[in-house]
Image (cartoon, rainbow over all chains, first blue to last red; front, top):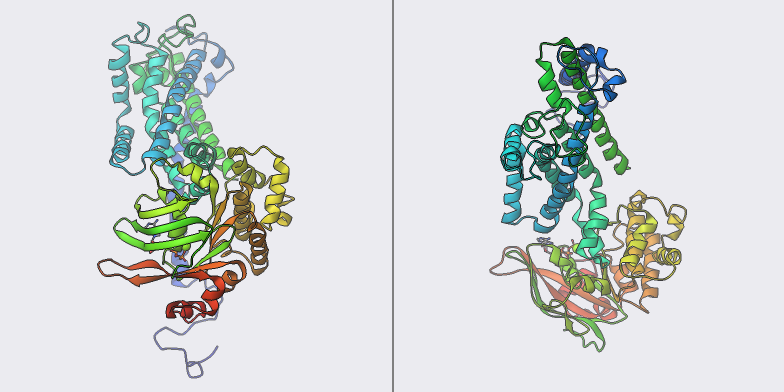
Length: 311
Length: 264
Ligand SMILES: Nc1ncnc2c1ncn2[C@@H]1O[C@H](COP(=O)(O)OP(=O)(O)OP(=O)(O)O)[C@@H](O)[C@H]1O
Ligand SMILES: [Mg+2]
């Protein structure tokens, strides 16, 4: 080590270095650093703990009912304990959520493209963005009520009142803001140079958007879509007013099952969870477990999509 | 000050560009000769890229952009009311300052532009000749199906040059195409420019004086001045002449100082 006398650049403003360059585990900054790392790790664990506990608890309560029959049988009549199934609710959730996605994806992605690529910053785009943000904050029960008033009560869909289709519409309204926002944000992340590159070789705006900009943003868009679907799939309140419930298999005769009241997992949990019959309560737990697993799977799919198109 | 150019393909007639209230360049009169290489030189921020982007309406994408004056291409006003900017950009291609390959395979990067421009010939052959002309074939030939983004920055830039050449526009605008390239690939690209000159008109922005001397027939020197009644510097065309004249016999003191490297 050079002493101050021989080093003309050294000043007296800093304390002299203690022990060269070796790591000193007892230096206050290193102790502090490790303590903080530990604390952060602790909080991170607490944050994911509910997920683990919920999944385990739900499995503990409903696990007994998770048999192959659950996918192929109907729930028992009140007071009976046979058959133990909820195939109708699983199909119903798939139908209602799938229908909602079919409505919300084109509208939402189209709207996001319009905001990011066409309208950009004008007052019109800004007010739509504001509206979408508000819609994202609207309680889901109000979406249900809205579709109830608009579709169910007026019997506008081929004279039917409660139906899977009405449930799809309510969930579509819920999915829409997520999809519009992630599309908008995802497209905004695409660098302007890329658009210029496409335009610079004579691509039209349509070709630029569909062939260059959208593929570049496909991963955030797909992630947003999957998360939007997963979020809507677990909703109960909007379905109580729209798809209602049914203890039977979908009525395939009425609009391929879309125009009749339909059972869904979330509403089944709501209906069965508070019944005074043990088999029903157990089925409610089993439905909870299936729902949690479905949402988990959707999130994993979203991550995989993000990873897949990033590479 | 402006030399008389017999065979002008692009001409600027009193072009002034504003970004919002900010004047970027003003009062440009300039004739770009056909089948020649024209270099734009000048200090940073004096509006070289701005003028270049006016030639193929790339500035249309910038919201605050506004332009006064006329840009004529074969005597036709590029900013006329019935002009289709897509058609303009098919005839006047561009290579950008920052490499911007599409997130597609190397092969697709070239084929995409050709296909949307209605190319009918042998696509494999076009991809190969374009990459060869841009001096990047050897580095790409074994990974044509890999993403264009997997190339290094300099290779990406040459891929972008290949992409621009592949659609065979009449004019190729190049904004500092070699700023990210090593000297060897720079020389290769310059050879390409010499070869392309027979069929294309090239306008190139460069900060490299030797490059301007090596590749260009004409040189336009831009400069920026503090303008009264304007915030900040406004660019203008200080001197435009044959490259030989600009570098050996400049008319103005500023030009001489810039090309000899004594510029502040
Ligand atoms: N998109 C834009 N919005 C607003 N101002 C801009 C924009 N692009 C350029 N300018 C301004 O216009 C002026 C000229 O910029 P330009 O990019 O044309 O300079 P340049 O000569 O190409 O510089 P360089 O050599 O650094 O590339 C600069 O003062 C810049 O701040
Ligand atoms: Mg520039």
